[in-house]
Length: 158
Image (tube, rainbow, N blue to C red; front, side, top):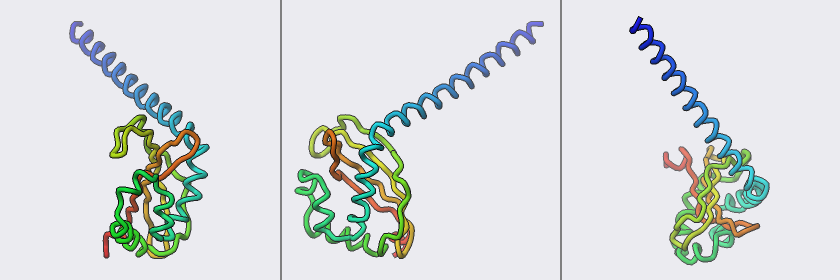
């Protein structure tokens, strides 16, 4: 009889634990969705506008999109070198809908505390696929590029 009680307690604890885990995951998903929806209406059109510009791989056009205080920290040589590397992907063919990745509220950055919104964008280029990780500074109604990185097997294989 005592063994049945212990077994019953064990299953109740397991069920409680499983329900708790499911509630945590569901709550986390809802929280992420609420954060992304707050920014998607403004950020996604901006991203759809600037990714084709960045994908021209022109250092001057790209510099114009970067927040001035960030741009001031990037040398001409370094930006030209990075854009030259990314240009190996070729012409932008198409891009998927930007996916909200993260929100960094009042994040301490190298340019002070900023609200940074992070998106990932899958893109197809002339010479291969890539994932662009784009971090935007929220300027209270508009955005400026804080950082971006282009990840691609095409670039890794060269």
